[in-house]
Image (cartoon, rainbow, N blue to C red; front, top):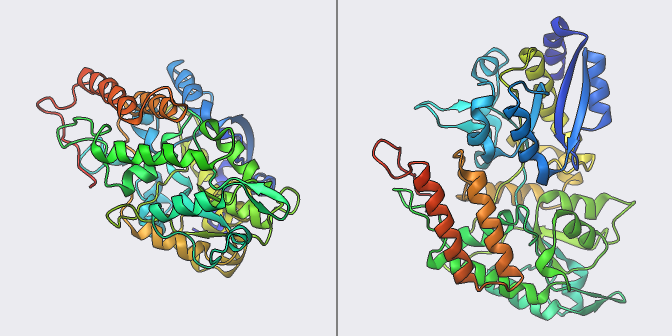
Length: 429
């Protein structure tokens, strides 16, 4: 639907106030909220840190009556929340949801296969995908070709070693900038896990989180930390972005929005004109895989104004608005295929040169999707803890993942996975 058509659809609900829970680090731009108000829908926000979002929604839903008309959730949390959310199928049909325009890598967003046909409980809002970030000036200072970033993970480690503590413009840089802080650190490591050929479970739901591929991927990640800054074993989302914008590192793997800020944020970035992006390197068997993340917008089943809330969400995810949200530097990244041919997006997103091509290339590879089962938050907590213990050297990678596997086995068996009548896991590798 065009914005004009959405405006017309909103008119019967004019004057409605929508209460929305949003991620505090990436709220919708004020201009769009003002435009929504002009169209007829007022907004009342509650901003929640990404690391607190799940628990906040759990508490809210457990109270039995949602405080919100729209909630933001991480895509694979749909299994945990589906019982509290509205199936959007009827509204999608009524308002012509353009599913075919969503890039394949992001089409699982909001879907939970709790029936043979599946149900969609959320609209994709943020198309995060890990990509390779690198400093062209640092590569040049090290005698490396700035137009040829590392193509394999072995080569990336070699680059990081050569770049580490190199003086670039009067400032020593870290060779590599990792994301290792316990909260959500699995999202960074999963890129290695997938590239090494890893998968979460066997068909009968036995954990593969301690497989040889998983151990090798974690050993690689731990080894990479020696080329990071002094706090390399405890770097979170904010620290990674801040360090990159301040010019403290030569290479990194993170979401696309970091590159957009580095290239276009004239207020904060000290590396404008000095950075570039590329596809993530290939793993040992030549396998390329990028971890996708992001956000969905869902409607609590107990909202008293569900249709107005749906139109509020559709307004924010409409392609023109996603483009403007992306270019405003909010941390929201695009996922609509049609946007990648837009000259304004091509020149204003990531490095302003290669981002759209890289995204399309990576999205065409098979990605390792996080499980959307209701038990995933508990599995994730155990995995994040195990990875953190390996990073801070409290446990060797093999031992850390063995402990995670034991915890996963208890959680899955307790929930009946692998028992007769339970659908099998569909292996991704």
